[in-house]
Amino acid sequence: MVEFAGWEMPVQYAGLLEEHQAVRTRAGLFDVSHMGEVVFRGPRALEALGRLFTNDLSAIADGQAQYGCLCRESGGIVDDVVVYRRAADDLLVCVNAANRQKDFDWLKERGTGPGSDVQNESDAWGQIALQGPRAAAILQKLTRTELSEIGTYRFSAGEVAGIAGLIARTGYTGEDGFELFCRADRAAALWQALVQAGAPEGLVPAGLGARDSLRLEMAYRLYGSDMDDETTPLEAGLAWVVKLAKGDFVGREAMERQKAQGLGRKLIGFELTEPGIARHGYPVLQDGRPVGTVTSGTRSPSLKTSVGLAYVPPSLAAEGSTFAVEIRGRPVFARVVKTPFYRRK
Amino acid sequence: MKFPDDLRYTKDHEWCRIQDNRAIIGITEFAQDQLGDVVYVELPDVGDQVKKGESFGVVESTKAVSELFAPVTGKVLEVNDPLADAPETVNDDPYEEGWMIQVEVGDLAEVAELMDAASYAKFVEEQE
Image (cartoon, rainbow over the protein chains, first blue to last red):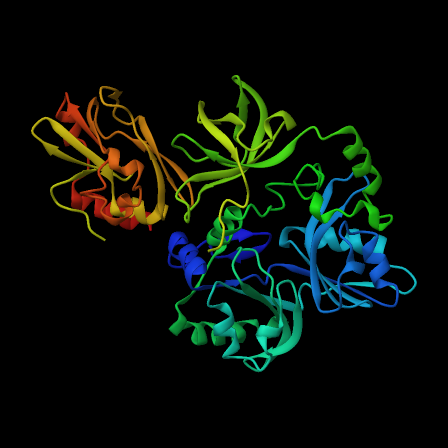
């Protein structure tokens, strides 16, 4: 167990590699109740949140979720979040655990106004992620909601094992799966029901360690490691969730400027071409000089190669570019590769 | 947890098996259990010198990066190269297939200073 954002969290249950493999081939269950939930309500809720969010919430329908960033005026990322649009006047923002208070303060101060009320409901919600190719089969045993009607990044209110909540087809692993939101005091019962229903399908509980290696194989960014208040979504390779044309939002001007002037650095995916494992904070070297930094790195359990994410100058960002990562004082060679590192079969 | 009687142990959780003037070196079952899944092992080259109590390599697990400390001083005679492609062997079989290096021992008195299985078992108990 480790302390994570004030929560006691298991790094692993049976073992990271076993849990990782289970999620890729069968199913894994993650207690992600540490994630925060901030809710916007009111006739102007959509508009208020839209001004604080880089993606375009008017482009999705009720019952759809959307990934994007909250940015500062400077373009620096306050957090990366998923917004669940229950209705135009009722939007749930799922935020990173470590940023719960920061995000709530940020959103409340700027998002509260006539017709828009912002509440921190983080303590009221529990959240369990059921991920893997067998996830739908397992979940269907416990719910009357027709899961085949919930597409990717869509969700529905429903009951699982008699426990009311939201059933969302979202996740952080690259596999098919669901994130289940319920009342915090029912989360343990929901967990037990899922463990029981999933056992015959090979479901295993999975910890923070597997969550990290699974997300990294997909090159999903981790706030605090791959991006922070000092990096913009453009630098972090998240331009696809920045809709500069949608209208005004906080950070837009800075990012338009940055786009016009060109980026000073880019987050890229790389693979080591020599033995070793790159870790967060290791320097990126070009001709022996530090030119960037590794933000995440691991040995990919699925690919058996050593992969990572790093900020590099644009001149080194193209696929096939090579550089070195300094590991314990030695340069170890790396090559920029396409992401995601792992592709579902 | 198994600590074979024919091995000698360090407080850093390495073991060594003496065959004539050769020391076969690895990490203990306790060490691999604490580390979790081993994903990378960095070892010296044949011919390198290792020094008792000093780092001779690195073992990385999914949880941590840890240094390996030499139980004895001497020249590296052999390195377990298959660990490069199969680091999980350290977890599966820490005392046999999961050995790391073999060293030519100059001073057998160094070996006598190491813990025997019973003392090491007691030491591990105190760690837990």
